[in-house]
Image 1 (tube, rainbow, N blue to C red):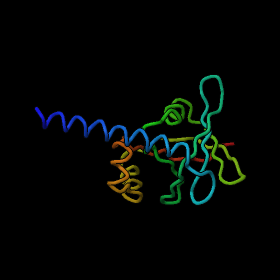
Image 2: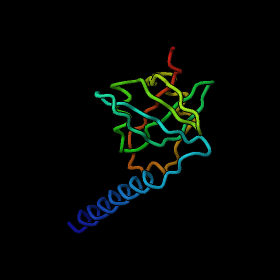
Image 3: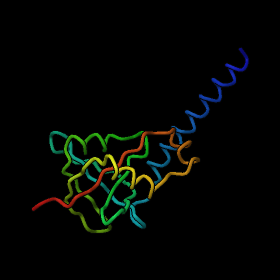
Image 4: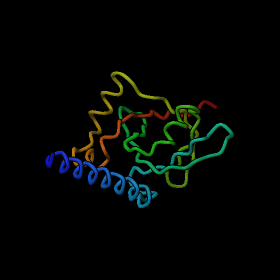
Length: 136
């Protein structure tokens, strides 16, 4: 019984650490520099929502990864794949495409997440969106 209580307390502490890590990341993640981009997703009424993400390059394509539990932007991108990406001062239109199969395997292998980061992120399921330039 004591072991169960200890495990329960450790689980609660870990959940709290994940919640704090995710909250702090969302608050302190810098805009600009490196591969940081701002993705603008749009809901059903056309309202834009911005989220700061890290961009990934693989095989000449540009991707963003869903690494964390807060993922409203990802659901909106799946529902309405017309998104905008801002890199520095330039904003361009893209179509977000869910990556599957061999392409997913390749991008995942090229951009692994260290186990410590996975623990801090609460083992959130990881998905990738390929960003294809919008036709037009």
